[in-house]
Length: 224
Image (cartoon, rainbow, N blue to C red; front, side, top):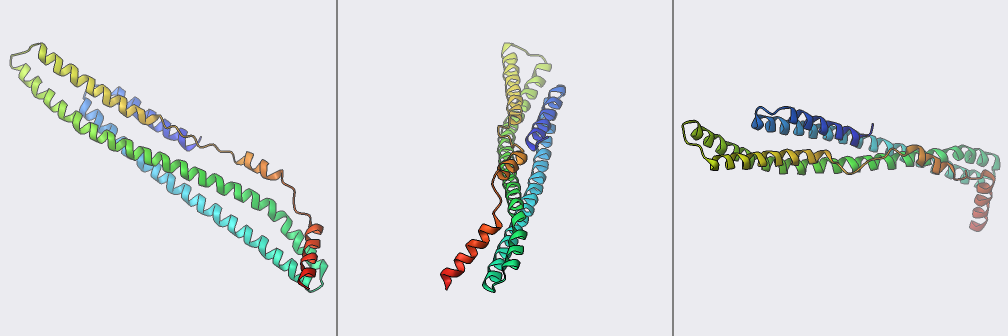
């Protein structure tokens, strides 16, 4: 399961729990906000883990490229010394590294894409939680006013205006719930296409050792 799907499940679970708690709207909203902040912590931890994977993939790619350059250098030095056999050996060792380099490049690109997606999710959660916090403050103020009015109603006077106050409060509460549910609609989807990327790279032909050897010799002739 991709990280985006896991985040959607977390959000959906929070919303279902929110809808199940109807006895105390104020407490329910506070619980929901605490849950969202906990989810944000999980997303930050996942982002940190993906950053580690990205750095590891980049290090492996750099090491492979360094090995390729080293073997190419040794082959050229062998040709300069007139030792074609050693040059062939170095080029033969370099040949399988080309396919490995393509795979490592694909893995690094995928890791970088995952990190970018997680950062987008994290930024959206931070933004949404900030907006919901502001709405919660306003909503709790209205709830306090509604409770005060309810206390007045309990000591005697009640009219249609009071019903209108509670109707308005109920609409505000429902609207806040709807805003919270919008967090579940994360629109980006990271796709794990590593196999496809590998397949694409495998279509490329491996370097021909004899052709590379001939190219090195031609290069040495030009230097003379």
